[in-house]
Image (cartoon, rainbow over all chains, first blue to last red; front, side):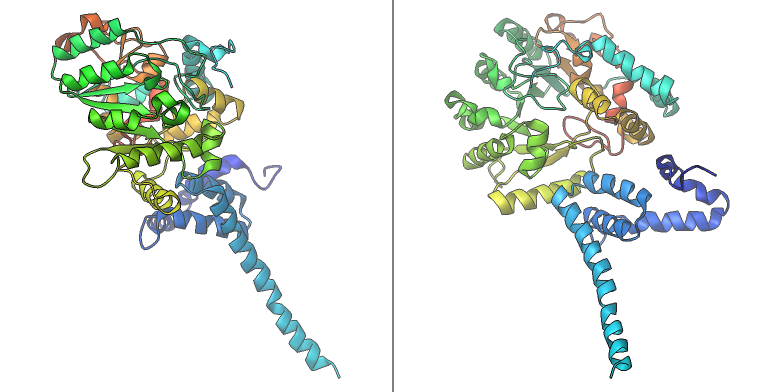
Amino acid sequence: MEKTYYNPADLAKFGNIAEWQPEMGRKFFDYYGEVFKEGALTEREKALIALAVAHAVQCPYCIDAYTSDSLQKGADEAQMMEAVHVAAAIKGGSLLVHGVQMMNKAKDLSM
Amino acid sequence: MKSLKATGHQLADSSFQLTVLRQEVADTLHLPLFHEKLAEAGLFPLVPVAPAVLQINVGKMCNQVCKHCHVDAGPDRKEIMTRETMQLCLDALARTDIPTVDLTGGAPEMNPDFRWFVEQLHALGRHVIVRCNLTIIVANKKYHDLPEFFRAHGVEVVSSLPFYNAKTTDRQRGDGVFEDSIRALKMLNAVGYGQEGSGLTLNLVYNPNGAFLPGSQRGLQEQFKRALGKDFGIVFNELFAITNIPVSRYLDFLIESGNYAGYMEKLVAAFNPTAAAGVMCRNTISVSWDGYLYDCDFNQMLELNVASPVQHIRDFDVAALAQRSVVINQHCYGCTAGSGSSCGGATA
């Protein structure tokens, strides 16, 4: 086992996951490639969504990959930071909305 | 900011750059050398096709000092093509049917014989491209009429604008460059450049503002058109997405920022045989300010002269040059990565 859980060099080895399950690996990467092609959304918009999700799931590999990808696809710094704020708003909002549950429970328990 | 040459930087020495490139690819990263990669694709030796473009670098003097400049151009560079050498270029062109002449620099307009040269090229019936950095148009009153001069001589204007906002552009090209570039673009638009139906072509050049490859040229073009149109009312024809080549000041940036190994790995991993078959050095001949011949402007800056008995524009001979192989080295990985890169943008 490595001394740290995350090693930047492992990002380039992502494809190796197919070695132990080639069929599922191939299907996953085909799907992955298809998802990021330009479609109803542009490649830049998809890169920004991926960047936001990367922060929400707090995946260092994904943040590394989609920071580069967003720049490569022509996103600017303000757009990238706004994407992160969108993730933060949803994360924060999803926490805070549970406050209603807490309030409901507290009301049930209180006189 | 001064040029690498003016500061006596080690990377101003082209042979040192070539050593650094080879060491990184072969010794540090243990990746194939460029000629090995070409051989795998069945493209080595790389042979030229009929020349379609004579690219002439009329001097290294420039009013800007961009961080990525492969020419190491700037106000402190004094290498300038003389009218005598320009005449040799005209004589050579008159003996051929090369249709396009691509003028570059530095800022080509700073050459004192620039306008005379354009007039002669136009009279010779050749399509003239000027690689204009935009800010030169507003740098001094004597350049304010350049858009009108370009229009009168049917010049195709190709201009660098690495991004559609000031922050990113100025970080690469210097403080105030974006604002001046926008002013210049408006002046070009005002005489008809980039306007539909005018026949006056204004193309922009995007290059990444860091150690990453350009994205889809089409996607970037759409973004640039939308942003420049909405924010400034500016129109242009096409956007050329160009990869930064690890040469001179960009090589210095890569090394100083700790991105060198990662960038070279990226370039090699993105090697595209289709882009390799379409590299511009196959149909272009590059002339330096002092009249020597090269396969491209990058080779020129690395002092990799053409592999031919014909070395100088005074001896220009298309048939003899057709016998040569293109001189390649590790920097060539830049033109073969991903969608490919050339002075006209993506190639694959």
